[in-house]
Amino acid sequence: MTTPRPETLAKLTPVLTKRWLSPDAWRIGTYEKLDGYAALRKALNAHPDDLIQLIKDSGLRGRGGAGFPTGLKWGFIPQGDGKPHYLVVNADEGEPGTCKDLPLMTHDPHSLVEGVIIASYAIRANRAYIYIRGEAVHAARRLRNAVAEARAKGYLGRNIMGSGFDLELVVHSGAGAYICGEETALLDSLEGFRGQPRLRPPFPATHGLYASPTVVNNVGTIASVPYIVLGGADWWKTMGTEKSSGPMIYSLSGRIANPGQYECSMGITLRELIDLAGGMQPGHELKFWTPGGSSTPLLTAEHLDVPLDFEGVAAAGSILGTTATQIFSDQDCPVYATYRWLEFYHHESCGKCTPCREGNYWMVRVYRRILAGQGTHEDLDTLLDTCDNILGRSFCGLGDGATSPVTSSLKYFKQDYLDYIEGRTAPKLSDKQLVGAH
Ligand SMILES: Cc1cc2nc3c(=O)[nH]c(=O)nc-3n(C[C@H](O)[C@H](O)[C@H](O)COP(=O)(O)O)c2cc1C
Ligand code: SF4
Image (tube, rainbow, N blue to C red):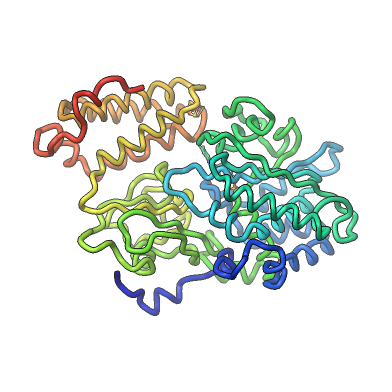
């Protein structure tokens, strides 16, 4: 393990993570001692429209993957329409490699609860939900405890802090399906239906939960709100880059010395993140990595100095996504890694549309053939052709995302595929595993 250089260490920007190491950080007493609920007090004295403008001015963009401007999304909620409004927090965190929302909810659940109250006040919602994935029992327990503590202190319920604003907050556990992280599938699931994406338009801003105006935001997006309210838009913009403002929690996993969450200003590079994480594991050299989960095209050692913000990663041919950097070395096989991801997409495909349901099924079969040493050169064309029929033709982003590892690994590591096909790499799968892609 190497020691981070002082200039890289200075790039750590603990804002959302600043309380994580405090003893009992999840308790309301600790939270209140460390500025907790001060932003709420300030927000409730402001006009809701001014809060929406503040979030617009801060340049905050969604932390769930697509980077949509948050203030703009809040501004889409029609006002004075006489309908109930809802805030739904997307805490599904299913993207492979992503581990930023669960630690936040486990270590500092009150920051999310406070963000929910402020955001609900801004969009005039009197009911909010946190939709958390079913397996995350520990985080759900912490959240429910935080909600109970906040309610006991008068931060939730009727007439919050004497402001006249009422809010009920429900923590809802899903059953653990990747597709339920897609915002419209999430809404169906929350309503008690099978989680499958809805046709858009109409968008959730006008026809969301129970066909009413709804904002769906990621955990990190909503947890950022109290800091912006307290620190101001200009302070927020001192971090990050021009179009990607603020700090971001990067989750690092794979062949590095110290995997975990590193909060830095947007625009940090992978070279710096690896330095912060104590370097690569001994004996490993970087070969490929995902900038934001497995749905984002792979990058290579050539891209170590790409700024990890929305624009920088796009210019390098990938997507910032969830900032889940999964790091692979010269001892890892990009063909096998892609196969494992495809097994995931195939398994998680909700089956609603043909390109994703059938395409992923067949691509898994082709990968099995290649990895069992029985692939052909035509298989590579079949893979690209299948991706071409999935990308842009699927009903939701799951199908599109599934093509990312396939096309990018073929772009950068075609030789690794050829080595299986031409017999230079020993088969990784046996004949038994070849049959019966389920
Ligand atoms: C298959 C799929 C899975 C998704 N999973 C998540 C997730 O787990 N958490 C999340 O916040 N967004 C997820 N998203 C993105 C959401 O649809 C939505 O864009 C996001 O919750 C909006 O919040 P934001 O604007 O704060 O980023 C997923 C999208 C797709 C297509
Ligand atoms: S792309 Fe996949 S997950 Fe999305 S609707 Fe189609 S089948 Fe379902």
